Length: 308
Image (cartoon, rainbow, N blue to C red):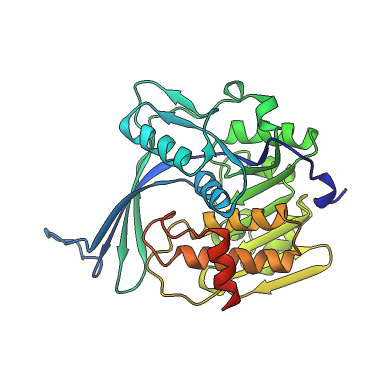
């Protein structure tokens, strides 16, 4: 049974299980060498982050009904993450709040001269989301389940529930963790970063890596290639889709937004070529502003961009 045949009317279009964080981002003229030095940030912002959470924000702005399932601390950062998701119309009713712990921060320095990023991050005090902390009925109340594999126990359980309920499982392949092999086998659509694809398959060539990933179970496999767009494989087809040229300010979250936009195309039953093109466009538009979420367009804005 194909992906389109399994789409059913549900309470949500997409439920995401994964990580949420707070990103502190600043732009500097150029990244300084090691030295006792003060550097002026030309722009500064604080935004919610995390792969699954940001993908859901993209989907929500495009018009999809979404919900996030994850775990946060009861600190100011946790409250900020939750309130920002709610403000984007992402349902947070199943977010677990853990008392007395600090949520995960990331400090991101963007070098204006090169466009490169340096990311400093810290392990969160928040314990991993457990399967027992999720509601099976809620998880299966969506058409699509989106996972970032950063809450492995919860992701595996949610994927099993989703498969039994006939849902489509989409995986953002970006981080190698124990259990990832089993999670890939439970996945219908796997879109991976180039680094993950090479590490996971042991193959440097993206097309070979993509085919290897598909052989493990996903009906659709793809790899994001940054400025070179993406490649995609399904049935007997391999598609290489270039991205769009924009004035790049910051690429933080571009992959997360790509996933959200790609899932939107699946929801709309678009051809995979149109879906990949749309995802490239939305991810490129995001890069015009600082942070993973500030530049995410609405559906009307994305369509207007594609028409020009």
